[in-house]
Length: 171
Image 1 (tube, rainbow, N blue to C red):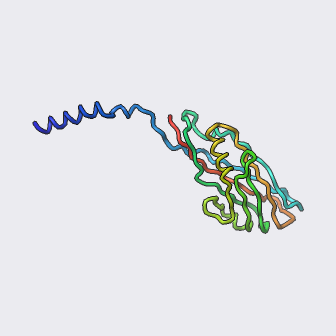
Image 2: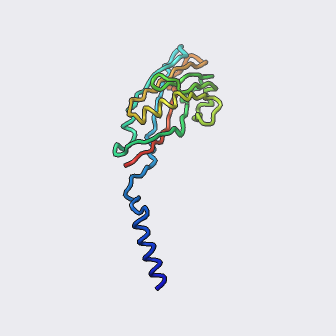
């Protein structure tokens, strides 16, 4: 009998102290599709390269979510193609410096992370701009410019920047 009274008391207590929280909204983590910019280095004697890629952030996640926050969990810089000596450059997001990179081309054959690589220097203003553009649904333009030290450049060489963003939102 005591067990029934205790159980009944617990059930009554649950109906009066927050059991309706199940009906309240909840926030979930949303991994956005990767944002990539690949910048081809034209074959020939010119050691410089540049380019831009524009991405609509609303295409990177399910629009049934209302975003409430976002964070960057990685940005990588990598190279592809023949060894071009040393490479250095800048990456901007919507015109604001995001990062600079400088090092041996072959070091970047393995993606170098903004989180751990001494070959990359990040700029907080650019990170903030990337996060704000995602949250506000503004177009994201990643632009890069740089140089290599070995010429002539053969065909098939490029630099790729990949950004990884996680957002938070309510369904």
